[in-house]
Length: 356
Ligand SMILES: Nc1ncnc2c1ncn2[C@@H]1O[C@H](COP(=O)(O)OP(=O)(O)OP(=O)(O)O)[C@@H](O)[C@H]1O
Ligand SMILES: [Mg+2]
Image (cartoon, rainbow, N blue to C red; front, side, top):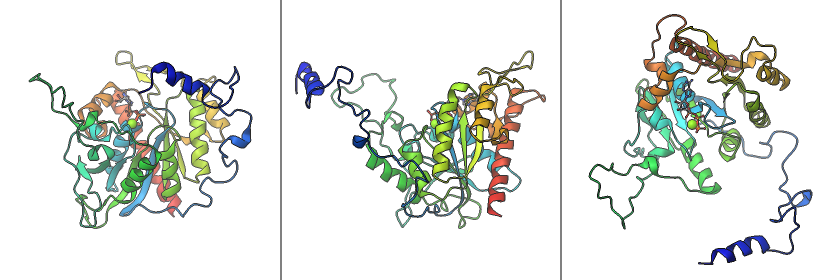
């Protein structure tokens, strides 16, 4: 192993002379040395045509441009809400957040057995709450305990795959994503009409506009995409990037869902707009920004309040859309449930409209 000083010297003096302003020699104004990003036209130009996911009629992407805004919570609750619509849709969830999968936790499927395989070698989804799911997390081995220092604590829990990190570079990730997308048999594990597969597959994407959302947009015939965001002006630039990516990929964008838009005080039942997203405020920079993006206000398809029990439901593995009740009309849980159902109806309506 090289001594630390030598490493540092290697990094900083690896090739030729470096200017004081740019000690690492990163390319700056010299556009010839930068990777060429296509400026015009769809990103999918020149790629093979987008494909349908086997045994899936419609695909809905749940994306966000920032991490931690409630995407997975909404993906699970959206799946449940869609399945509870009068149309009795068969809905599944695909967790494509390869580096931070949380669908197993949110669906009460932590540490389940590895999924089985069909005769053709396709993955068989794992079902809970009548919703079949597939996630990278199901395929990870338990984190190995260090053999050199076995735990002597009798109370220590056995190793689980929750602690197993995915440490892969791009190509491996691409391969895994393609397998999860096209080699999961969604007709297996669906109780009603077992041979016909799913009406809707809800896909939970990782945050941002990286490799995985890009690949999905390029490879899959998508029917609807929603972008989850908080209603603060700072999130706007992230939202703009997401909208722009999906437009370039020619992926249908149903709209934005504002999460944690407000908090309903249990004592005074007043709505408190924690991030300044009050729709009645003429200085509401978020709504102004969304309009400036060429999306009319109508493209904000739902605004969900912050509700403590929604978070708790997720922790317990029981989506709030399944168990939540709410008491009076102004009960935060009831307001949240109504907003979630309305998002599900809007997505289903839009899919139907685009199909006919
Ligand atoms: N409306 C809500 N009310 C209360 N808590 C919420 C709400 N939405 C999400 N949460 C909580 O916020 C946290 C982040 O949510 P979640 O994991 O769904 O975000 P995410 O966008 O999927 O994150 P990541 O980018 O890491 O995948 C969780 O603890 C979740 O329970
Ligand atoms: Mg998530």
